[in-house]
Image (tube, rainbow, N blue to C red; front, side, top):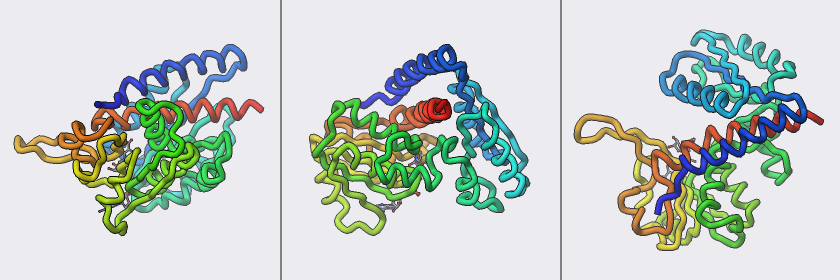
Length: 287
Ligand code: NAD
């Protein structure tokens, strides 16, 4: 069966819109997300447009700063310095990837950890690693765990979770979140031996690899819940592009207990969790 990411994200946004109303009425705070886009990368423009739209739809303030491609690292750092000190801004997101002449890690480190709604700052990774409450946790991994719970219920303890991929954006944080849920966690990656055998042990299998239809049906046990993070564009026989995940969906869907489709699975959860993080940052700014 499919796990419906669109519906889960919609329900989360509805819940968040109530929290926004409460923040306004009880504390006079209107959560504000500022997104910075450097350059004109078409995919990034689409992502930013969707972020702005969904932010406004739940009653939050959205601000978009568009900078030309040749913006210097120093200029971007100056913008961040200003936003870090602007009390009306609760969340700051710098859309990645950045042009090559700007060092991403320098930029991520310059965002105030309290406004780092992408959750990529080392302070927030550390808080997640330590299991501290109130950490701003990367959005896609949060979405993955919510979708796993959508099918399995809130108690994931004792389940064996296998995460394929060890990036700082998806693989590592999703593994940390699943560990917090008391799963037994295996992180598999490009050097893992006998990957199909490792995957076959998974009660929860998270694929964050970036290779189209990489995970095959005979890697998945029948009781498994499969969370497919991948977004890959492949050319069809008709010469058009279509999006596929990191899992061979057509053959896995009838083999496993539940799976997130691509599109319509993890993808919609990412922006919803970004809104969730911005509201959390706004709440944490009150004290
Ligand atoms: P990445 O390239 O940073 O990391 C890929 C990981 O896969 C690496 O850690 C690597 O060790 C592992 N890997 C590569 N080849 C492998 C192999 N042959 N066997 C086992 N492991 C292998 O990618 P990422 O940023 O973590 O993203 C992963 C996928 O998730 C991509 O398709 C990306 O587009 C997608 N993604 C989706 C969302 C979303 O909102 N749904 C968000 C972020 C990323």
